[in-house]
Image (tube, rainbow, N blue to C red):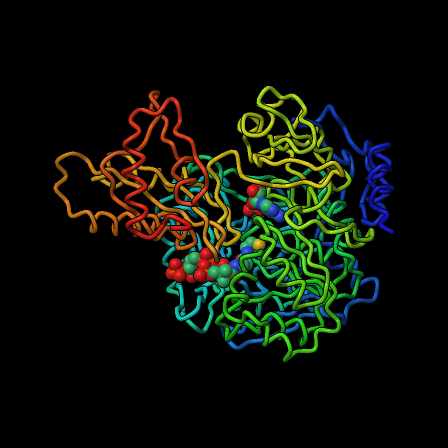
Length: 636
Ligand code: COA
Ligand code: AMP
């Protein structure tokens, strides 16, 4: 029997008592005055008046409790052939030394630090070192190009940047330092210091006075036993800013606090994922994404688990058996990844033959999120792994699951196609355009009744107005998730589509509007549209349509190739925009709105109706022909 309904009801009856009880799992420097203060912040704040330190709760607390010898981080990098285990005791040494170094460069509580790093343990150490001294980190995913990094530098105004000489992708080394240098060149704000981890695969050239060698600084700190202690911060102070795609090229700076974040994440480890302190937990993601923040770093470490830092891919490093190898070798109990990783594995090893080579007896559950989990992939994983496969739904904005099937509370019956039921803290309603609550089975905007639970964003970095306008304005009293869907009679949620221009490519959240801004900047492009269409491996991929300026006189294929390159250069390879096609005209309504939704339906082979307001119906025939010519219409 699942305890879910009882626990959800107990939260609903008295939310403050529920979270106060959960907060007992955290070490506080000073208690809160109010569990929730509706008068603070935009819609209220959690644990006002309390003092705490997230790094203390992730590291020192466990050392003091006797876990110094337990592995905190296992770094497994099949792409470089490296493995390394860092105990909680060693983590405390490394983090307190790096924190002292940051201090030496005048980084103080409230200052921002950007972390632009590949999947190496130093990235985690960097995040914790910032948390230790109350500095606010902002991790930028390594797959983003210089321009994206520059945008984040200009928004966050970091005093210092922590980076590495390179990242490694299958078959190629990606030097990070030239990207970092270019980003600082592009940005109006100039951080005074960069600390660079030199990796043997590519050494970085250093700029005198500004750039410093990570290992040299750490060796010096070790020699002098130079350490910084944990600084008490307000529970409501920011722990980090994580930029995520918005509807324009300007990303949104999602702010995470310290106190509420710890409380919710700690609760989730036991009650959603069913792991205990000492268990090995693996989120196969990247520290640049929210999944990495919450479930590579903070969740497992707050809970005293061992976390895996995996630098590799589900296939090709060296094969589709690497996930099973890591699970067996390190005794992973729970794996969390995006469905796309399983689609990649299934494609390479459809019969799951490589699974049989490994002892997976300690493996208890697979959790999936980041994009829709298609029933085929779910069933394949269930059939071959013989453990519960649990889809759950959340967003960068929330930091933890809005809906899940909580393993720790006892599983509810699984319904394929649904990421489960609302978690305590989330009162979910599906609303129509007028903000009226819809009955089960009716598709509408999925909204969360305010206040949001602990860990969810209190605002956007230095932009309350954009926060309100983006999330709270459309449906007063609610947080708008920008996902459309419905609930069934038993309260299970079904997530169908985004209501904005965000697409999910291989579990990565991208803005088609952002890509359009880049294409529109090409000198020969008059207008453009980017549409996310279904893809068997990545879930969705972007496709670009451009109309050339009259009289440009350019070869179409040349302009198309330049457009692809432009997006790669400005946003990064992660955008995965590989197809741009020139068309004579774009389909529009009479008021000039481009019919992106209709183009997507045509490509995805879905039924579509000719919009009554269309300017010229013949244009849709032209678009269909252009898609068909490239084999991009499903079912044809
Ligand atoms: N640094 C630099 N480049 C990167 C990068 C990084 N950290 N991460 C990805 N890229 C590049 C890739 O090399 C690729 O370049 P290419 O166009 O030259 O081939 C491009 O960005 C697109 O990456 P991706 O969409 O990840 O495609 P892929 O073909 O490299 O891998 C998967 C596909 C499915 C194997 C991979 O996306 C995956 O493992 N996903 C599941 C886990 C996950 O990361 N989830 C994220 C949130 S939970
Ligand atoms: P991100 O902020 O990158 O985590 O992306 C969040 C978005 O990914 C959500 O708003 C959804 O559109 C999508 N998403 C995440 N998890 C799921 C899921 N389990 N099922 C369907 N869509 C999901």
